[in-house]
Picture 1 (cartoon, rainbow, N blue to C red):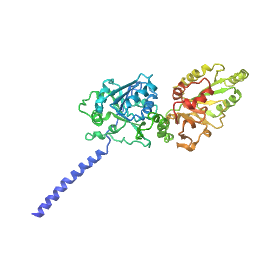
Picture 2: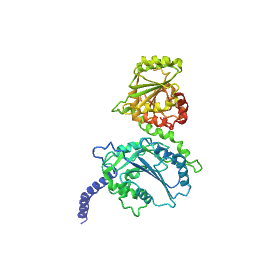
Picture 3: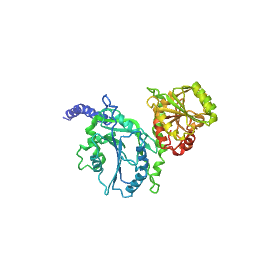
Picture 4: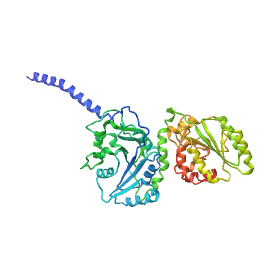
Length: 480
């Protein structure tokens, strides 16, 4: 009898154990799979500019609020508005917000500031904000202590939502101050129905979604943020997209209470402007650009026609990839004939005589920068004393600028301290520097025209000399 019982037990184990192991294998396997499905190829609507709504809920601790606002208001994209909700803060945050917005951004019409005297559940605050949103507006939930990584965040989001199958997105991000990459995205196709709270979109610090998705949800009784987002995961399924570019900086730094609010956030600008470049520059030489862009060249000259002639000869001999060359010069009467001779020697160069016409210097410069943006979105600023001694290929420089979103490409490397570079390729050094360490901006430096126009528009100057003097003090951003 005992022998028969052992046989039965053994037979039972042989039948049941494989099924148990098979089940546990699939449970473990599904736990490692992504909750975001793979997008299907569709035609993108690249001609549409979506409207975005930044929503920030403040419950105290506004130390980095100025930094956050600055990262929004310097976006190279106009179709957005900002909603700021003070949710029952008791530390004077609302008064500080009012004061800051009135002093710095009172002229803006796209800011809405509202206050709840008593703290409400997160879900209810969001629901109230969404009532005022249009269905096709794209909501960006942003923590007031975090900020956008660079000036093209909204442009990247607009490109992502050009795919009509995209309903929700979450981007790549870095942690501050460690600058470590936040590991949220995992490869895979499966949406895990039993554990939606572990979905990367829910865990992401920056979430974006069409307003109508949450407006149509019944969230009565919902209190916590995750309870609010989980139904959206079940609704969106494979319409969620991960944007691998670094668009968001998640701040883990806690400030002491006696530190000056807002000001410390503004001092972080120099770091933020370099984040996007640092995350992509090191790998830039591995990426092959699909399109090489030429660059225009603007040369500034004051009473130096002979040096200008030598400079132009060296440029024509060694520099490749120039689209148009412009010379903006000021000359006393004794030098006018020499400049006229240069115009005959270099008929393809566009000369502009600004002698005794200083009021036209800034408008002319901005006009030239805005000209032919599609053909030549980059420009080199040069002084008349430049002497080129080695071959230069502007296409290599513009490719690097395009891939890294850096502000400038310095060709006069002798004036740079390359030992401070954060990354480098075989021929290109990537350097992070303070504004005070910036070399002369006219020593054969390539810039992105839109970025340069944005900075120069707010600066007051009427000549190349006055521009050079205020460049370091009035230029908005410290950049790479």
